[in-house]
Length: 300
Image (cartoon, rainbow, N blue to C red; front, side, top):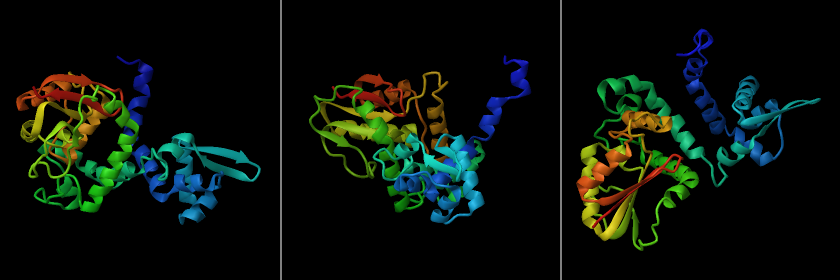
C-alpha cells in the first residue's frame, strides 16, 4: 500500500487525469508549425514574433510555448529584451517535418483521427467494436471504415508508420539472421482478395494486430501456401507480456485496436499459436525493447 502522504496527494492519479492535455499541447504545436519555424530561423524568438509569423493570437501562443517548455519540447532564454524560445534537440530531431527521423505525420494522425475516436472508448468497451461510425459517420461496411476516412488519410497514416519504422526498423530486421532468404516480399495492399506471389520470406509489419483471430488464420494460411519450402514469415508487432501485465505502450495500442479496428495486440504465445495453425514451425521470438518486436516462423 502507498503511504498516507501518497493518498493525501495522489500525484500519479493527477498525472493520468491530465495526460490527454499533454498530448494535445504537442499535437497543437506541431500542427501550427512552432517547431518548424524555430528550426528554419535557427535562432530563439519571442512569443509575439512566433505568433505573428504563424498567424495566431499572442496570448494563446505564449501559453502554448510555456507549456512546451514545461514538457521539455522547447527551451527558454530570459534576456534584457524579454523571453525567447528555441527548440530542444529532441524537438529538432523528431517534431520538425524536415528531419529524417520526424514523427510529424504519425503525430498528426493521432491528433486528427485517433484522438477523436478515443472520445468513444467507453462505447467501444461496452460494444466490443470500433467507433469510426460514431466519430466520423462512416459505416463499418465502407472499404476505408475499419481504419481510414479517405484514401488521403490512409496515405498520411502510411507516412506516419514509415516515420516510426525509421527509429525502430533496424532493431527488428537485426533480430534474426535473414541472410539465407534471397526472395523477400513485404505484404501489403488488399491481401485478403489479391493473390500473394511466391517468395522465401514474407514480412507482415503491423498487419495482424488489425484483425481478429479468424482473419489472421485465414491470411497466414494464404501466406503459407504461397511460401516456398524452407521459407518463412516475419511478424513485426508490439508484444504483450505473457500475463498481459505490460508493456503499457502495447496495452494502450491494444485499446486503440478496439477503438479503430477489429483486432488487438497479442502475446508471443498467441502469435505462435496462429502461426502453428497455419502450418509454420520453428518459431522464434525476439523482443527489441522498442515499439516493435519480431516473431519468425518457418515452413518445413
